[in-house]
Amino acid sequence: MPENSIFRRKSITNVLKQSEDSHGESGLNKILGVRDLTSFGIAAIIGAGIFSTIGRASFDGGPAVTVLFLFVSIACVFTALCYAQFASMVPVSGSAYTYGYVSFGEIFAWVIGWALILEYAVSNMVVAISWSEYFVSMLKGFGINFPDFLTFDYGTAHRAFLLSQTEKLTGGDIAAAQAYVNAPLIGGIHFLIDLPAGVITMLVTALVYVGIKESRNVSNFLVTLKLVIILLVICVGAFYIKPDNWTPFAPNGSKGVLKGVALVFFAFIGFDSISTMAEECKNPQRDLPRAMIYCLVICAVLYVMITLVLTGMVNYTELKVDDPLAYVFQKVNLDFVAGVISVSAVVAITSALLVYQMGQPRIWMSMSRDGLLWKRFSKIHPKYKTPSFSTIVTGFLVAIPSMFLDMGFVADLTSVGTFFAFIVVCGGVLYLDYKGLSKDAKFKIPYLNGQYLVGGLLILTLGYAIYDNDFVSEMQLKPLLAVFWLVWAILSVLSFQHKFSILPVLGILTNLYLMTELGVLNWTIFLIWLAIGLVIYFSYGYKHSKLAN
Image 1 (tube, rainbow, N blue to C red):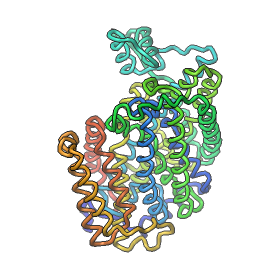
Image 2: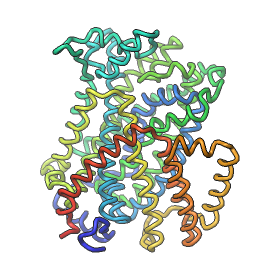
Image 3: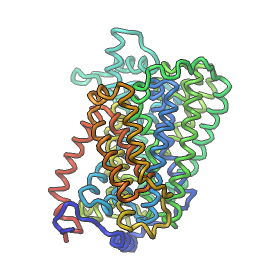
Image 4: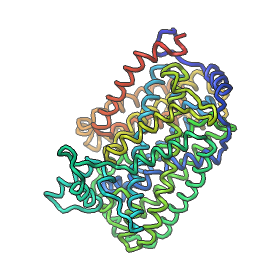
């Protein structure tokens, strides 16, 4: 590939050599084993997803949201297998960014890296806001009333206040409206800020700054506590399930269930974040693939069980709250259990915040090391052996927005870039298999010949969609479905020609289909973020890329 091409690629040999050279200079500590990595993965996946956004998804889809959890978990398993194969071949900190660089070239790598920066930042904003909700709830349990105008963002409080003028409020909207009324006026504008969200972000950033060993020890403790609390919710809540609450199972139909795609998918984001710690693993080629699969399977089972318990304990219409686990136990008069959950959630959600704050600086570091970002982003602290400047930037990038943006808006921003990264990783595995570059991989995706299966499934699925009589109307409502069907047709031809394994193909198709379910806001924000990223790439990264020199 010409040196001046935006599709110039890095070879696997080049990536590994650069990693070894950088490791010699920076001294990143190689101390993580498979248990630590699995713990980090669980910490990232079971964060605000299970403690917060799971309630909003259940409100939209009813009990049938459990089916969506299963579907998304399957999509993530296909993707995780692809990540695992890449991680065994390219055990460096860049995650999907580096995998894209090896497979499809620099411009794809840049887009993925830039998207991952948004993913990790937004994910942590949601986690921080969720932490704040549980923290305030915990303080109330001890009789401490934190000033309400310091616990809500302006948008949430203002909308709740306007809504209170026309209808009766329920759940958290009551407190939000009251916070708006109580907020001091500055220049005629109600001043509201989610202060706890910003403070906890900076405290966790400080912990990440001082070292991977300290972060590992804290994460392992917090994950153990988190799993104990989730099992408590499942075991105790099972005795308070009313089967009537599961009827109707899908009150808003498939559209209601699919409305929660962004929220449910957000709940699974995190398994990929452990691949950013490859250079701090003792044996990354063996341990990373195992850890990804372990944490994803564990979390999928827990999500399905806890969703059934939540929607069985109370009617789904009551779950539009940011602390659903504590809320359902308050509704059945188990205030002590609700209090234990709130206290524990404050501690446990911190582990998710910790992992994302570790992952994002390492993406910055990898991009900077390749010359695509300024050199300061790859600077390693001489004492703490962490990417110091990148960590500080990450802290401010997450802390400031988390104090002013509302949960619903932020959660909707996470998914487009992540889906794109997942699709590129799955496609990258097909490319490396086709080129014969994956023959030395220490972990390989089980090969299932898709030569006839991919096309056969296309014919059956397309036939059913047309027979169902909703095909034309669905295409009009979701124009991106045309891209989905086109990509499936192309993959059918390529699978027939090259005997592609069906598992990476299914990873591409499931992620692409989930992308078609995302709303206009998701795509608008992603395209704006992408445009900003491309300006930076062509004004700086393209010229300073190590491959250009």
